[in-house]
Amino acid sequence: MSVEVDGQRYKEIEIMAAEMETRLRDSVLRVLRPTLAQVSELDLKQQDLLTKVSDQAEQIGKVDGLESNVVKQGQYTKILEDAVMTTSNQVRELETITGKQFVELKSAFEASQMALSGY
Image 1 (cartoon, rainbow, N blue to C red):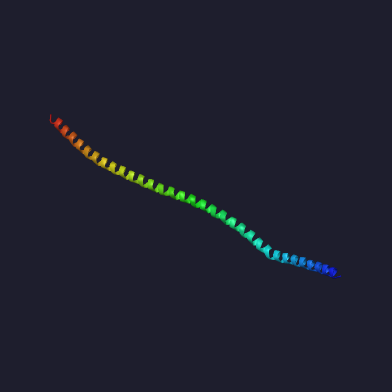
Image 2 (image 1 turned 30 degrees about the vertical axis):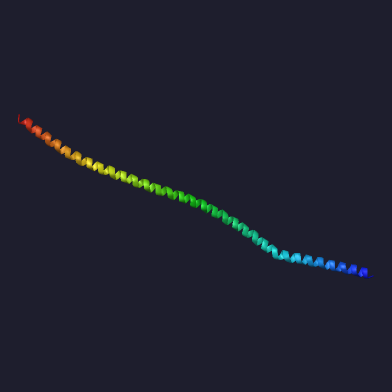
């Protein structure tokens, strides 16, 4: 009879152990499910942030390129401004020289007219 008692007791212990295992699993799942949900949510947020960072890095690259173009255009504008100023100064000098030569030619013409009128 001790075998049956021991066998029955063994089954009772086995059933209690199975029930405790089930309760323990339920308890663990109750604790882990919200944590897993939070991890999943955080992973999605992280992916979203990484996408935004990547997009912003791309935009920063474009802005840097545009800034470089603006600097180059500023340099070209300065070169053109200097060229225009040089040309303007040359035109003024040419106008001054032309004006002086015109006065000299006019004086020479008048002198030759006076010389011819004396004949």
